[in-house]
Length: 95
Image 1: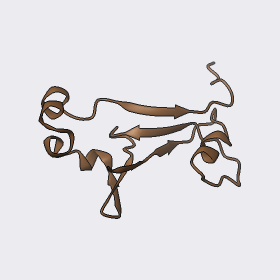
Image 2: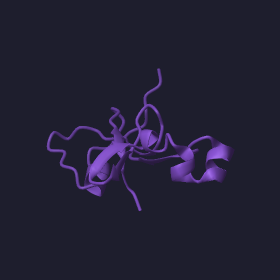
Image 3: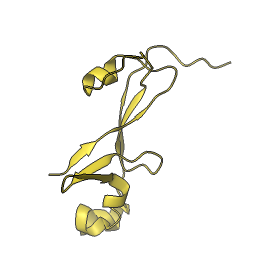
């Protein structure tokens, strides 16, 4: 098994407690945390812990066939999902 660590998006509409508490992260400043991302999205890939070091998940699966298996690498060309945990404290304001 490979430990996958999420990366976080902090948007003004996010909640200041839920995501930090869920992942055991301090947030003394009370800043909003909107999303926790698990996946290989190039904008914010999760971290994969391999041999005690964290590397971006998209870099780990660059050799898709070795990590994902031949069928997945051929069929999808990568990791075809992005799991998000979303914590919205208030609706986004659209003018």
